Image (tube, rainbow, N blue to C red; front, side):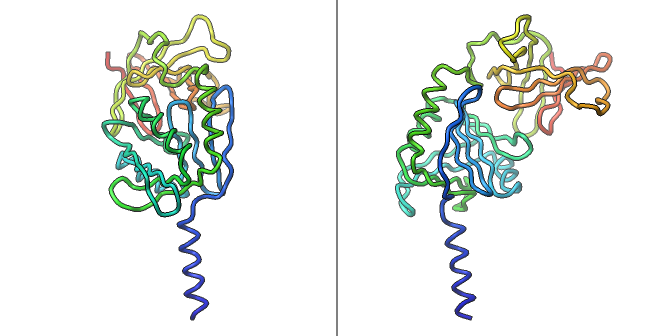
Length: 257
């Protein structure tokens, strides 16, 4: 009986411990600082966070609630600051079928988060409405990875960079809890591998076109082109007669102009 109780206590301690792994950095074409364990991944890009929790149900919960509490701890028990990401300051969405991507409306908010990650010992990503953690991450040597990220992002194109010329053409509208307006433009002159730009709610990113997106499989009726964003987003464009639509994630966006 004592052994059983001791085993249960050890399991609780392990589940509440921060993910023990080393921070790394990956440069061009998409700079990111990251930490990866056997069941979770946290990736810091130039203007957004991607978090793959241990279970897909956690991803669904974050997106459904449109909320994530980002807590900074100087040790295992003392919280020194936090940022509540949600409606009004950020957009949460599932990308690549699993990770949750948090895109911040104000770049200063994201810079604050990077500062706190670099300065503290543990990061606790938890539910916005209650004290339940999705994941804990050890921030040891995260400062070095973040310095590399900031250095690279200073010269790298960012997904939210609005200095690109906005597309002018068919506008697509729709979405679920988060309404989006999406527009794209195929460039006359490609920028390396990037031959298109896509704008989502005013944020523009480079993309590459793919006309054989479905490989050897027969493409769906009306398929025109796939747009593969530099931020790893994927847009499928369709046209059938007078009907124009675009598929992004689990939602269809119909022409609205």
